[in-house]
Image (cartoon, rainbow, N blue to C red; front, side, top):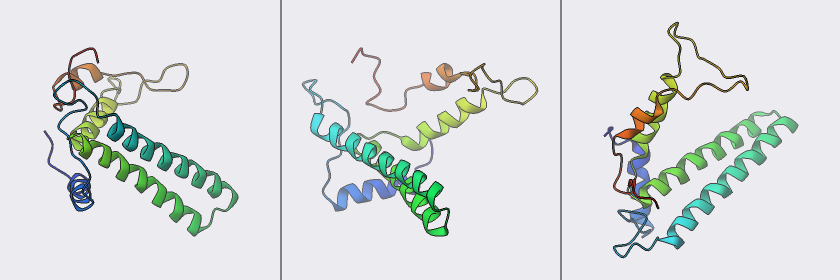
Length: 144
């Protein structure tokens, strides 16, 4: 596992300060999902992504420093709510982000340059072996 970042620490501090629940899994001991918590956290992410996309459109209309600052603030809000989702379910988002980076870097060819598909996206790389190691208690191999 990776070193805990200040984002993870801040997310847990926020949850504790605001008396927000922290679960060890997406499901209770009876196998029932924590639907209200999952839906709330997902709704917050969706809302922040919408606000970010609106700030991107605003930037096209007004490329001022204020628009750039607003865009950066919305981008940071996305990161914050993603860390909140992770903290709510005891997910190691720092380790997950590191694995995404490692996976992305595995998409390079022998010459150290990216290999692109016809649609302009990079190849899949070696993500299966990178993600094979268990990362969290909520990441089960069950068919849920």
